[in-house]
Amino acid sequence: MAEAGFRKVERDRERRFGSPGILLAGYTAAEAAAIRALLDRIGAAAVPLVACSAALLERTVADALTAVDPGEPAGPGQLPRVLLMSGLTGEEFHRLMDEFGETGMPRPIFAAATPTNLQFTVKQLLIELLREQRAMAETRAAPRREE
Image (tube, rainbow, N blue to C red; front, side, top):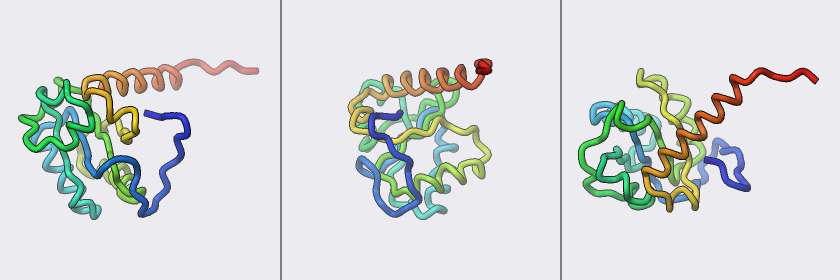
């Protein structure tokens, strides 16, 4: 979700907005474990990974990222596949996206934490990300006008 002043994430060691954490939606517990292994492999072992459950949908994204016992993950078909990154370094951010394909799982909607979306409920965030994804797909599919 882009906000005014959005800038490209550089491959650096600077931490981005928010406390370190990843909110994962639409993946099973076994898939979340494979993503955890990917985080370990890219040097982000200390980054908390929270798999979204039905119980987290009405909590704010900020609260969900710090959930101690989020409940059983709501897997594929129940929630869209989303990976929201908070407080990662630029290097962690890029390596996670670049190497995600090695998991063999469907690619999620990647999103970054912002001051605004951390205040959304998880449900609001997922709806907004799906809207943005559809809008981008429609833009790509629209015929180009020649000028």
